[in-house]
Image (cartoon, rainbow, N blue to C red):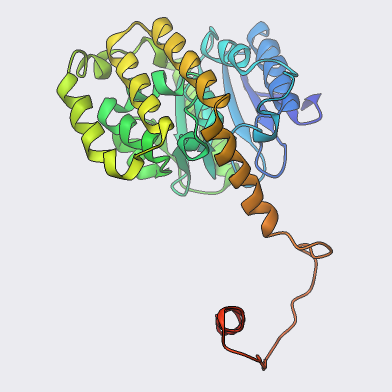
Length: 322
């Protein structure tokens, strides 16, 4: 196994290149992760290997972008260049998913030619919950795999769908029982089968059958807007996600990407997303008590006395009761 950088390794097994990402806690797409993936895929593509597997160590596949980088000075390889290395590979690329493939992580997996997952995995594009939309081709690739109605529901709700549902809608190609090592072995076996059976390099961007079903169907989008109107009233991101799905159905892939990029930048630089991202970080910061971490031992409290039963006293009592 060769270390490409601090978070990325590249190894070879029977003609299959295995790229392993290990960037705790959730393998988020930080600059060092993007750099490692770009270099590893470039090296694997230039080698005489026959297929490539992407897998992650730890508790999860790539669980999303590094949100702390949003709005800052760009560093590292752009995600689009990483995706080009994957999607444009002349060798079959298999993404092996465990834990969660969310946001940018799912957008990376959508650039692989095939996706396999363990039963406990979950996939989703939750950017809408941060006042955003998927900005790395997710709004254009997801409908091409799942169909437009399913993609609309996923993109505007941010819901994480389980593996069984992902298999049913075409998001993943195979389900693998077992632990991470079993997933790794199954991914290598799938890659070997892709070579021996001469399976096509199935680029999601080229798959137009499912989006063609929604082309020109203004009623589909009008009805969907009505179905979410009450829940999403006042928020821009759900509507912008719908507009991107419309672009996927009605425009060539590259033109749809341009629509996605324009609307993503508008949301990213707007006040709604800024507020929702602030809330996201503030909520997590509120759960961290200075001086207390995961190694702090728990005290077995058997009795507690609370003076007063007003708002604060009642809240304290309820917490202890729970």
